[in-house]
Image (cartoon, rainbow, N blue to C red):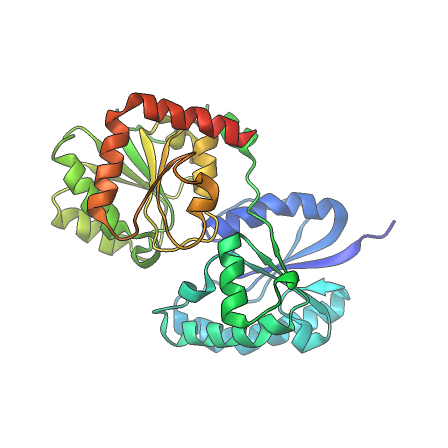
Length: 343
């Protein structure tokens, strides 16, 4: 039986949460569809199934300006690809080609493009134009759904909430492997793109500086890569933390890092539905997260599965982590709850 054509569009497969979700979904989609993965920018940090055809519209683009300049070409190239493959459902293409369009919104559209200059404004304006024309919108969390309804004035019945898939059994199994680098004895872990505006490394390092005065042997391990690495290195040097903060870079298997950490700390200013919390919990790692507008509370409940602290408050973050480090029964409780959550 001939499979239906499906085109899966994503900006790139550079390291990140949305990209990890894409690579988790691709093998399942490939079983049921004749699948073509479209990358606007040919950057790949994740492996791809051999049966997936890849079409890349551009090589690595080095700046926001390059993205803006290439946007018209990407739209035309996508339209040609859709016509050639005769796909029945595509992403962000109904207005261009007359096909059904399904849009997946992975984070808060209200904050996603703030401070990104011309590119941010262009994407925001394009979203405002295309979202009302979409046949279906998938929001990664209820919080994201409410923002879409409010900002784009859409009927709630057109929006489905589907959280990110996380293979918790695989994460737990991979966590048993040896880490790729020698890890310190006691450490906190942060996993995420090195982006200060989004992930709030400034708040994290400020809080860790306060903790470090009481726990001089405690280390902080940062896993990930991104555009703000030099800024983060400068913050580490400025707070005299060079001997206590480890920049571990991109890791193909981050789960052994999670399994050995005292706690995973996520201090983002905004999220969609952060996979890293569920992944850490699957590895038996207690989690502390900021109670940002969307995401963490839907995963952790009212401090039921992990600890929530206010956004942009290093004092509160330090107090929360300190309390968790000092309270072994509570750490054990969160680990037990995480196992229940996984089931």
